[in-house]
Image (cartoon, rainbow, N blue to C red; front, side, top):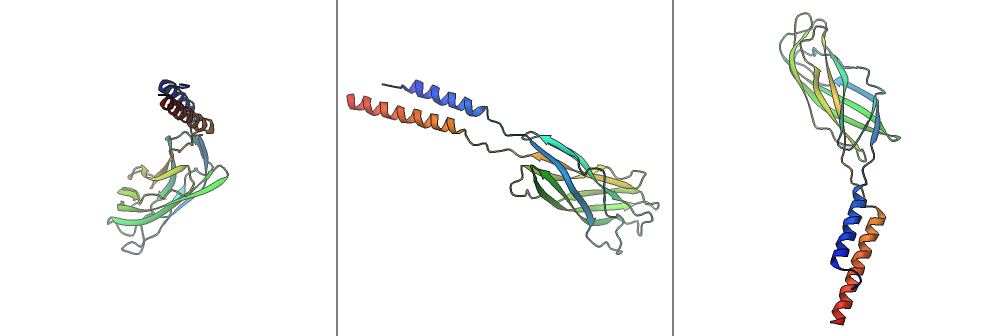
Length: 202
């Protein structure tokens, strides 16, 4: 017998160790563009929160290993200086961010609702929440994006709140190295040939 089952098993284990050293490459990215807007009509025709401004995130960059995440403050939602009404409003909004990854741009967008939003007479945020729809992952993107709730809570004295994004590196499917595939195939072939010879000899 040329190779026993023990030799076959040892060869496959060795091949597995060779393959186990292969890891997904880290993903580097930067924030290429972003924006947000109020898209709905409030009850009185004027929503008490204006279009969001960006908070210095353009050009921000990072490198993530598989499964790692990083968060950025992205948008600043500004209250009207003199609110039209003091009753709570549900305000429809939308936002987007474009990430530059490996020479390509990937566009992520979401629709959100600022629920139960209220302002004081002087235009200071007093309460409310922000929720977003799930964000679709563009084809081929190694990253996913989640638009976050408020990073700076309602009630701040300067009349705005902020929200951000969380960027996560997706798990990668790493193909087996060609050498490992060939090694396992060869071992299986030799093992099958030796079994046939032993069977014929018997």
